[in-house]
Length: 524
Image (cartoon, rainbow, N blue to C red; front, side, top):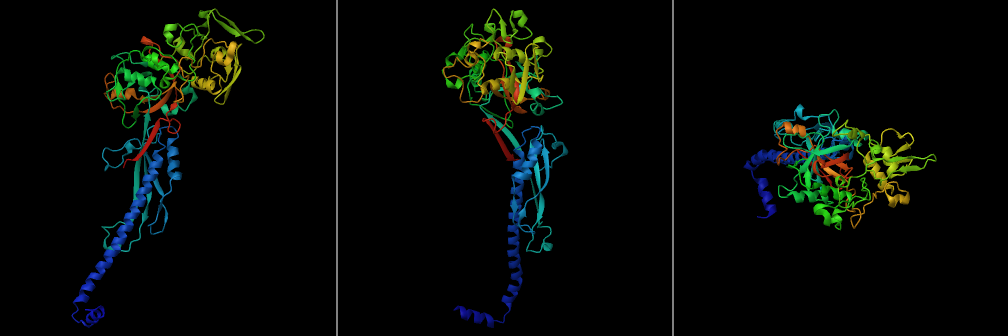
């Protein structure tokens, strides 16, 4: 049958059955087509809204580094860094708008549980997640919604929660107990103040099973999953970039007990090579810092001995009278030195640590005047970190009255080619110590920015012990509060003096510190 014949036959047909089927099927077919179009529009709208809330939450979470301005930075990132459009609203194309932003310190155990007030925080130090909810949008449907009110909701909304995690590669396997735990201000707030950054911390290993870990204690991490012994741990301390990785989310495992001769590993950073590291003087991975001023005189082999072995001459204002050393100015304002011994002066400890008025954590007041006398030939004016200090050596005073941090002093010496010693000041140098590296065959390290900086994990030891964690065994994974940079002010001595002396320079920050890796992901 040809097509014209078929249509003629159809037109002459008077049975009516086709019309009945057409009458019933046409609304279904048309409605089904409309419903499929609506479903596609709703799906695309939902996808656009969810993608927008995910992107906004990730942008905000990337700023949650616990610093005091992190919440404000997070809000600005959410409001300004990301722009998302939608194309299916009944009002036409437009930008997805933010409805609410909430910061969270924790999440419920189950993804289907609602966020509780106990999860919400307004503290930058606690915020680990951000929740972003976008404003609802309506979709104009072709299919009459009055017929299927219970099936189709044309008001679309979305919300997302994203979190922040930080990881470090090449980290020194060291942890310290949070010096600000249970204090009025957090460690994040404290690190933003010069007064905190110049306080010396006496990082002492825990003395035994009967002693509790607390502020001022340090210990060792096990980044090798129990597969590395003491030699692997010492090598990870001594080498420039160890093959280690730790993160906040994964936590850390502790390596209990003291480790014999760890000072030899630490002291490679100071151009001192002893013990099993004597043969590392030619290996560039164990090269020292650029500035290794440490109070050593030239009277002994400074490349192999430790401070306690040499009987170093420290010209500290509190003890110099006992050494028979007189440093001052003559009537013409020139340096006057009366001494029967070579002079060397390290970055000193806080004064209160010499007279016993403080123990683990100092007050940040150190003998800046004597350091400048010995190591910088009575320099009368110096500008460090945009602060100009004027020194009055007759009165033994300086203004402004708060000294710079030892790290700032150390960096000034490097950045201005003024590392103490004869190579800088020639025959006029008052100090007999050469502060530039001289023991390693390659000179200072070129693979890391500063070998006297170690990145360490900070643990809330008191809280962990109260929760039942055993710091005397291989415990973990333990949560990390943060990662900080510690400047080592002097070499490690032996025996009971296996102490790390240092200043907390600041937090480890992505973009500023090459080994830091920030990870942001949508949590729910």
